[in-house]
Image 1 (tube, rainbow, N blue to C red):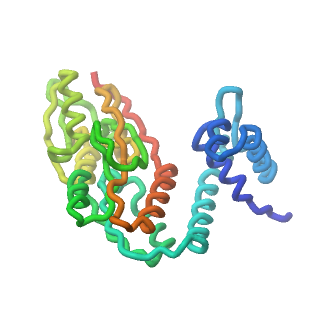
Image 2: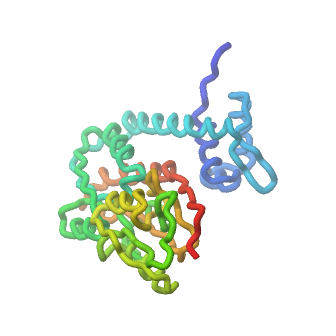
Image 3: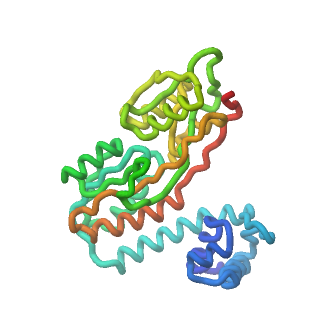
Length: 295
């Protein structure tokens, strides 16, 4: 039996439908009609002899085979795109000083930077991880070329990369202490997540106290993972050992943006931003939800 080669065009269409959850929206993204998207998916199913979607008039859901194929498809497309950039894209060289907010680090930073370095080996990438407002001050002072960080409420500067929900997080077995204020693990004053959390609890008249402060998001997360306190995270930045805590005031969403443009180094910046946009679309981790609610 001859094993067929998978068609990249069909895989890209399949991944788009899986991520967007529908044929119409996927057609708009791919510049195709709904019927053309449906035909490509059918061709892929015929090629592998498996159904990849359960389709009704109102919804599209991955089958078990579709879920298995999705991981392979993303890896195949990522490798293809990396090879094409390396072979076809104009040569890119130079030095790029990048600041990255640590809210992004648990999510997908290391794989993206490794992929960028493989694709553009002549770029000297220098990375500094820290708090968004500190990194932005460094960029404004000319010590960083580009910053990936949060945009504060009401701001319009920066180019959005992705938006995610801001949620309460704790260890799976964490429960609110009876008769005592909610213990919080937060970043130092000046953090947007901290300001939102304290303001939301104040408006809801929920007693609370900050019992752990760290300048590192990983430090704050560790306190929550240990069951010592409740914390606040972007939903996409969840780490193992943390779950979303329901029943607390909503914290809205946060925009992760790119700030600065490297002062004429657009040839270095553009491919990095493109990879960031692609990478965060593949990386979100579904946060589990704790069973105990705050009342």
